Structures are given as C-alpha cells and as structure tokens.
Image (tube, rainbow, N blue to C red):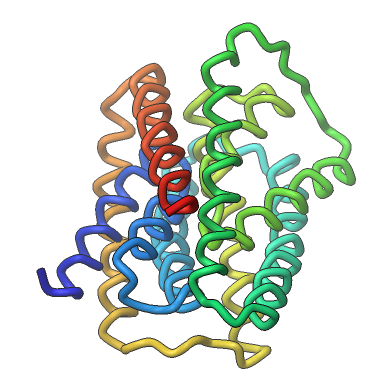
Length: 259
C-alpha cells in the first residue's frame, strides 16, 4: 500500500479515536508508524505532534464555540506545566538519541516506556471505581503534575495520550467527557510549545511536504468525525472504547519493544 495512503488512514483513525476519548491520537500514530519504519523516530514524532495539534486545535475551537465545560482554573496550570515538561522530554529524547549509535534502540526505549505507562493506565482504569479520587486546586501542584505529564508525553512522542485521562480522573475527580475535553486542552497547549521549540531551536527533522499536508488534513477531519461521534454516545461507551484502545496499545508496544 502507498505510504501516503497509510499515513492518511493512520492519522485519520487515530484522530477520530483521540477526539472521542480525549487521548490526542499520538499514542496510536507513533507506535504504528514506528512499526512500519517509513521514517526516523524524530520525524515520526514531529508528524504525530502536528496531527495531534490540528485535531486538538479544532476540538478546542468547537468546545469554546459550543460553551462546553472546560475547567480552565486547573487546566491552565496543568497545560503550562505540561508545556515545559514537553520541552524537557524532548531534550531527554534528543540526548538519548545523540548518545546512541543504534537508531532502533531509541525507538525501542520509547516503545517500552509507552508500553509500561499504558499498562499502568489500564490497571488504574479497571480499578478506578474502587479508588478514592482527589480534588487538587493548588495551581503550583497542578503545574507540577502537568510537568510530569508533559515530560512523559514528549519523550514518548505521543502528544498527550491516555495518561491525561487517568491523572484528571484521579487528581481532579473529573467525569469522562469533561476529562476528555480538559485533556485535549492540555495537549493543544503542549503541542504548540513543542512545535515552537522545534522551530526556534532549528531541530525540525527531515520530512516530505506531502506528509505534513496529509497529517494535518487527517487531524482536522478526524477531529470533526470524532467530535460528532462523541456527542452521540454515552460516557460508558467512551470508557469502553478507551479501555479497548489502552489494551491494544499496551500489547502492541510491549511486543515491539522486546522484538
């Protein structure tokens, strides 16, 4: 199959799922594109982040227009912390990359980290009904939580992912759909900072212009479709889809890392 068609399908489907669940989509795009090896890890991370930026940007604009609930009081410090964590995560990734003579090792480290993180998220999600959640309001604590989230997401090249939902549920007692919207807000701010840093530091990886056009289009169209589906299904259905995605990601990344 033509690589451009593969990019379009992966970017679109990941963005649909990301918009429905609030997980961004990078957590799907990154490992899938890594597995086919069509480009280096940093190029795939760049394209993944761009796709997520377009999807989350569209979703946030629509949420603001429709006056949907987004807790900016906690969401903004979280997003700012995540943005700075994203910068730190990118530097960590580049450090490992520059010190490694084996490019596949870098992808393996990312895949293993992602597999472990998604597995822990799955365990929390399955046991969430029996876990007493918190209601953090201190902006400095929120920023600290965001810092860790951003570092993890940027290092793994996923632009947010399922960890946001688990954190928003546990630390802020958010219900599923509100957590999804807040997660996309955090992802949007983080991706803006991440891409700005990439351009300012002149560390943009090599890519073909057609790839950018395809992934941007896939992100926006996927965001449109995903939002429409999210409106028509219940929070319980969103949770089931989220768990299905997490299980798939955990298995896929664990296999890829050890392969």
